[in-house]
Amino acid sequence: SVRDESAGCFERCLKRRRANPSEVGLSVEPSRPERWVVWLSVDPRSGQIFPYPKEVGQVLELGLKRGDAAVSLGDSFFGATVELSGGGFQQRTARGARDVRRLLLRRPEETVALWVRQGRYRWSVVDAGTTGSQERVASMPEEAVDLSNLEEQSEREPPPPDDREGVALWQWCHELHVTPAQAEHLEDCFWGIYAEQQNRQIEEAYQGAERQVEITVGVRQYQVVFGPAAGFARQEDQRLRKRRLMRRRWVSEEVLRRRMTQDLPASTEREQEECILCLCDFAETAHMPVVELPECKHVFHRACAQQLVDSRERCPCCRAEVDWAFLAT
Image (cartoon, rainbow, N blue to C red):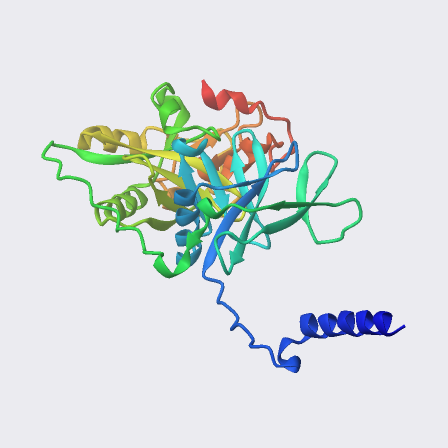
């Protein structure tokens, strides 16, 4: 009938307009640039998506803009660190990890969507339409960050002048996942020290209000990231994805000299002359603390052996079992 033909024509016209508005004489709204961004994380237990508060999103966006490998959110956000390097972003805390995503928006009220799937141990982000995946949709305009008004955070202010006699001593914590609030309860045996040159390098960067500084300790390369708590920093190993708390103490020059030499053995039972891990002579690296294994008596730089300590591995020289708990005594 004429009515059916008219209806069919009307439907075809609507389809053409949706597919190509300019074809039928409609004005085309210019495409808006993606000037907003929202940062989300996926709850590993429920698979639900949660936005980071706007102020946290700004910190993450600035870190990404600077090229930071990771951003520490401090005790105010569960002691979390968000890794910004690699293929996908990850948030890590003492309790575990979760996926993080950054989504660009044209409008702050725009609906966002993520596809997630439950794995053996947790929910994670997957590609759209992946078998067994579920779509999560939300609108969160209050948490959207305006990229056009994103301003770099003010530079870290240098510490106030210290008129006390003495020098700064930077220490790194042997234990993982320690927060500044917990640091004051740890005895001195839980803290390692840096060589005098590295200690000076860290302190100069701290006094110069730098955000971070790179140092080399034996075979390991670290990024020292200052803050967020005053007098604290994070020692980050990007290759092994490990972070340790650092603290700054004020000591006399006599204490500093004593600390720099107290761990050096007068001799070793095996008369070992070099660290088998970095192949550097102990005589040429007298500033680096060493550790002698109680059973087999092999000796290593403490910094070089830290990975063995963390993973509770055997002695790399003779494969003897090691009770690494002796380092805490």
